[in-house]
Image 1 (cartoon, rainbow, N blue to C red):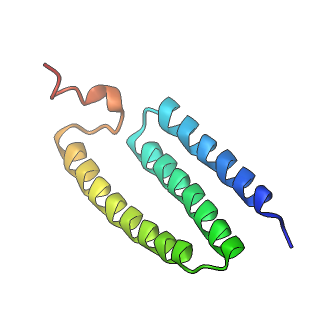
Image 2: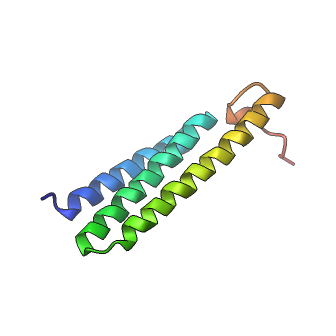
Length: 100
């Protein structure tokens, strides 16, 4: 059996990879992927702790996180497509219309 610490270390490392990708990338699609990586890291820790404590609440919460992440990506992609129709680029530097 794999100890709980290994799952938590994997989760932290995966979260750091997602955070690094979120902070350094300028492409909107890569930002969505980075957020998904961070949410999956959270799911790994939730499921590992749930299994360690022999409680199903963490696994149920992980399913809700997956459902909310899917809904968030769907809304984000709709916004991305709408923005792409106005300006044919997906780089974040080119979207400065809301700046004062």
